[in-house]
Image (cartoon, rainbow, N blue to C red):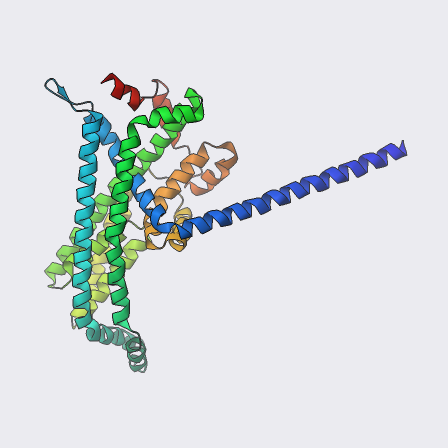
Length: 388
């Protein structure tokens, strides 16, 4: 009897050691897989950033294409193919126009900034003199030792890469429109189960709907902020009103941090151009009030329940994607975070991640979509196209 008890104990110890060994092996494999994914994200950042932007642009127009394809003009019906071609042409024209505007503004800023270099150094030195008179000369000497022209030239070169990135995004969007009609059929064949395919389709629709609402609200608020900054700078007779308005519009897509950076940059530009620090302070206060009203009052009011994401999660997402993809990663951080949270909320083993990323611990974004979609079978674009 005692021998059997000892054998059982030794067997349990052997099983325990095997279980611990298996868990340790799983952790090591997870770390290796994460390292490989992180390496690929960094090495293929240009292609992946363009692909994510293309997916977002495609998702923004997918619902509009579906709505247009149901319209009838007399006896003539707009087909999916025609609506897709019109949307693709519109996206290409808008992207190329925006790229041309940004490149021209960057070039004008580069050529004009070199003439303001001495004034900028003197303005920063005046700010240092407010804290300590001895620091003015030290700060001025330190800034003059920096090769400002080389940084400005590098910035102009980076702006030149925007055109190649825009071309790649347009190509990605075009191929997505070409594959759009067969997505439903491919999803069903991939899942090999109509119910599972319908559930995945509802999850994708939930992600698209939430991200679209976020981007539309952000675009409206950012455009209003850019217009307000342009009017303020024009009212005080400052240069760079157009570039600063565009920069404010772009930076406001970065949550929390972008509006602060835009306000500080506006204050510095005003301090360089106006001789009185009180005027620059007034411009800073006006810009701060505009950013607060639009970003902290109107933006959450329009956003509603579309984004119930944690503020700490947003900061972590900004830090991670900013480290991996740089400034473009900071723009894409919130849409990627929303997609990850919605997907994790439908996976039982990953649900704790969704709970941590949500604001109130309630990440069930897809419930409303599932309730509305459960009453009718999912639409299959390929069958609709064949019926036409």
